[in-house]
Image (cartoon, rainbow, N blue to C red):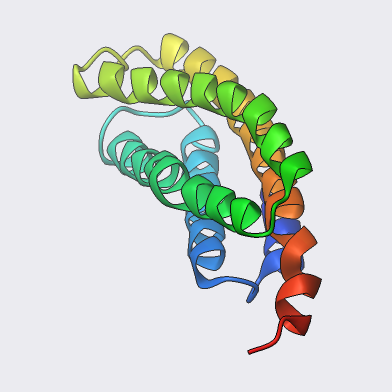
Length: 157
């Protein structure tokens, strides 16, 4: 997962400040996730889980309230019907994954993530869903942003 995160930063780094910041948040999320999963006796409830949840909420919020909106605005500005149609197909799955992430955060806030066995199982499922989400987001960035780079560079000022 970390490798795909780094590949995305290499492909799109510097393209757009918003995307750069969001990809940096993704990297922080993956690092926090890895730190939780790499604990020898399994994740312990406490600061590590709380930190992960904070980063998770920041990341999914930035996606929904900043990045996706900006990508859609850009696609509309360029009349990119193909990109907008793809977004309509992908967004529902991203939203479903967001709901799982928010539910995980809510359970942890309520203290329901203290059992190590259930926390490990939830983290494994969440990790798989986040990986899927990252791939979907990368597709959106590729289609809704990178496809317009040439048009932006040759557009008259």
